[in-house]
Length: 245
Ligand SMILES: O=C(O)CCC(=O)C(=O)O
Ligand SMILES: [Fe+2]
Image: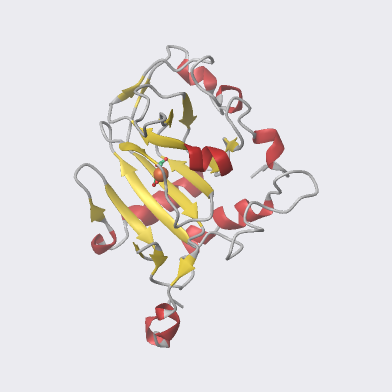
């Protein structure tokens, strides 16, 4: 894949510092291979919420701590993590995880969004180093960013919208990560998709797909890569029988 050598060319200029969007982060073949792994994971890997299901790799967090210190499985490491680590933040600088505690993402959340499914506006909290890398597979979807008001309430309308295309990587960091909420509306079709309403319009792979301003959703899978600050030592005490090869 042709990747940018530095993130500067992928910065979403309309947003506060800092968010980046790389449209062609994965090939169609790589997308298919990862979707296949997600779909064929053991049933027990899925956790069913009221409207959505998810997988956590290598494990859940308990009290903001990752319970399992084993590495991510190969299919979540390659090619995504090595590509993320190969891109410098700016020319001559280190990668995004150079100053994070484990120097790489150690946790992946896999969320499935069939049409009419979303995620309530939220902040990601204190468990993670403030860099989130989201790989999108299967379908485009709009991510909404909301300001919180002085009294802690959420503004009803999103301040910005990011369109996440399949095979793209969205990176959110710093102020954008900590000061704003993000969410996805539970609708079957994203509407009002225009260069004026979409913050990453100029970075899209396929803006001509949205000429009528609408996009009917299909099932989207997202992989959210992060570095969990605290990792339990329990995983290290498990015998070799429990470790992945
Ligand atoms: O699926 C997404 O793009 C966002 C997921 C998310 O916000 C989360 O897992 O915390
Ligand atoms: Fe989130």
